[in-house]
Length: 457
Image 1: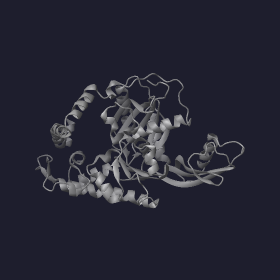
Image 2: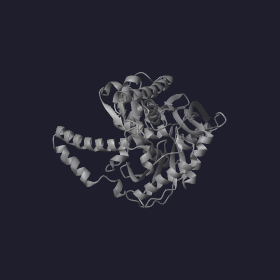
Image 3: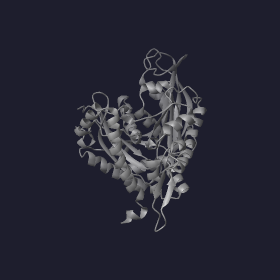
Image 4: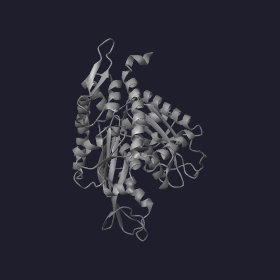
């Protein structure tokens, strides 16, 4: 067990859920998850905290669940994700003439260059969240990824500056502080997600990360290892659910259940003769809903989101074949059936789902490798990036905390996997398919027929 490293905690305040994950790097540089808790989110709309009291309640519930998963944990400081359509970005340029030209360039000079960018003029009511250097120049040499150790008279860089609304940032900080925590840093959500699902070679190849959450779809575009563009699109999973609710005249809970279980992002792939029966309200007759109609509604909204992605890629001139890594979909909304095909069709780029297991240690529970937790795991990685570059103060004494059994894969799970690997793949598929099918079918039917009224009794 590697107790020389700090335990870093990520807090993802989302529109539909709030997640808290505590992690520590092991001796192989992989993240071991030491605590995990989540809660339903009520006070957040489109990525912005609107109701502070509701948000505090949800953060406290997620924290309690995290402590329940590992009672030895202590959580004081958290890295918090930020999104919402108030987020803007701009490109700037900064240069400094060096004092000691006979010595090599140091980290201190780069920090000075970055600090100067915080004085950039931005509209009143906005605040700078992050300053990210893109490529550096030393005298006449261009496109230097890291100038430490170079010699020269003048050092400069292009910067990507991310700004947000002061009130929105204040609401997040207030919610975190009133929950008994301290915000170590605010990190733009698509940047956190990209660090969780990407390796360095993906960033070199050129890639667009599309994180489809509940309230916003976050975009980060990398090219030749450099962050080129970030954007927050104000449509996501919740809009699809509302479209289904309005278009088919059902309750919001039923709309969500239908989207998750029977939804598809491509209407052509949906069966024309398949129907879902939904119980009527208070003695009304039951409703028959066509699976194809459901897919048509989902496809319309998803196509709109992907059109926004294409628009942003065109803005930075990376819409054609420049992105060899294609589009990486992550976040809860990326689990929709046939979304990869729709993304490839609309953007003209290859697409895949990004899972946050790129940097996770082996042997964790399946739940943690879901795209839903990309942002939260990415926040821990961002914290480690600060720690490794001495950007922030971290405690010197680290408590010994083991990975709790509840977050480890059980031996029986591993055993069944091994046995199944020995049997032919087709049989396994059939066997898994049938058991999963009946389980899902039963749960699906039960969930679907739950009416809002049932919850009160």
